[in-house]
Length: 220
Image 1 (tube, rainbow, N blue to C red):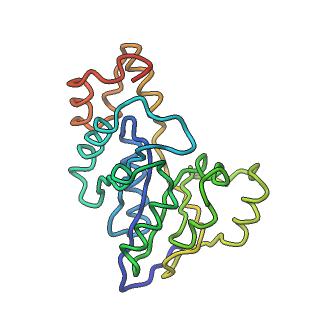
Image 2: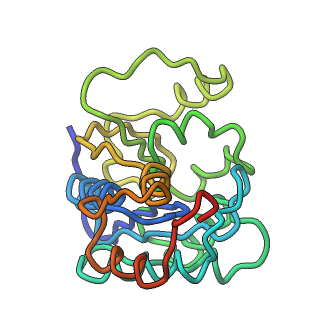
């Protein structure tokens, strides 16, 4: 059961390349916000990802689409922290910066199960829990037996918790939530093939994509 302390701000941090941002991203962010009673969720645009290929879509287009997608959602905030910071976009640097700016806030780094299983490849990944919690979102149903790195398994056993309660940082929590079956790569592929995934995008984002003729080729 999830329980909460009082008297401090709760902030979610949801990073991604958002190429493009779609309704699956928005649904996931809102679902976590509501379940954990977060005051807001920062949708953090990864400007220069460190453990995946650089997005082909220019940062300014991805940033504008993210702003449009968040505009009508009071609890979601498009965040350009990593755009403004030079060099590679490391989650630990972003979380450290948020902790410096919000020393008394509860910080929750939100990620999916697939991303969580790559955690040992992230820069200084063990330090993440010094600054916030890891909230791992997975589909309803039992979690499959982990086939992850044994180092990650041991780390999880030390820090896993059923509830983050009033702690400001230091825990790994798994959150079972229904999620939309949609991916940005699916949208890009269908768009380049001349097919439409309009129903999976915010209308303002869809208009922006059409206006700027994005994703008409596989290169974005």
